[in-house]
Length: 131
Image (cartoon, rainbow, N blue to C red):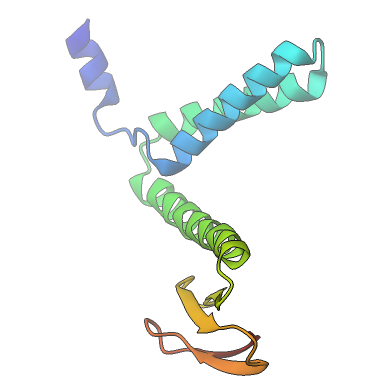
């Protein structure tokens, strides 16, 4: 039985960061369904995410699934950096934290300098911002 499962999964994509995120969304929807009984929208979303999770996990198209995963990782990194910048801006009184629009690198600039031009140290892109 173990060998049959191994042979079946051979050449399949498996799980990655996007599949983990979809799985956590499924768990969240499952918990929501406990509180909101007979809500058809939650059930439909749950089954759609379950189908998407299984489709991605059992897919044999490595290239397409890895491209999807890379796009998700880029979006996730930008989102995380923006949230971290907001949190640091609330805590730090001397510096303002900006996020480069090109590479999502977090950049620290001094506060109360007005409108400034910021140069990203990693991608060398320049952009205007208020400090």
